[in-house]
Image (cartoon, rainbow, N blue to C red; front, top):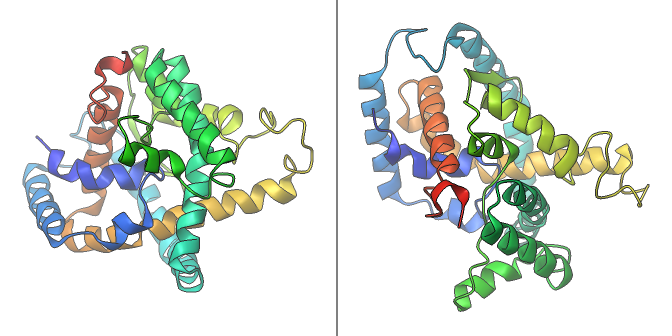
Length: 279
């Protein structure tokens, strides 16, 4: 079953975070029609519970999925709508750029681990340029350079889950994590590693990049920044969420199948035309 028409939209939803405010604002009617068709085909290919070999824990996953939906309806979505209502669009864009710049640290680290030196160089350069000349990442100068020249400093997407896949580790069963949402056994481990060691926003007890700056490494700073990052990401997805509600006949199956397809494409670097992550 091919769910590629849905993947293009869902790459923005699951990879934390790589869309811009302008992309979300000008979501076209044509994309809605594609999503509607994808939902119909997915529904036609749907199987009974526990028949999907990638989802042996479907009953449990659906329960967690429903919990996440309730949490989102009552907490995250209202917070995101309040954030969007209060925050002027230009400022919202700057904040999104700031968190995207921090994520480039994760991308650079995992690109190196995957021996993808072209991606590592591009992402590392993005961090350097946007942090220094882009006012700590508030302005995405690296993307402007890409648009105006032949130098490719476009945003990449790499995480430790992809790194494990690069070295041949299987995905394991599909899992819906409380609060965090769709994942697999491999990606869950990847999230933990990135969060504790690579992501400047969510580093746990390690404080790798901020060990020499005790104030920035304190919970008083880290927790509000992490909360702000989560709300900013959720605000960027408000328009996509509305389209999903209108298009998907079974939201759980749509999310699951699109997530698994998207992760497979990322492992193969199909969106970057870099075979197996190597150059």
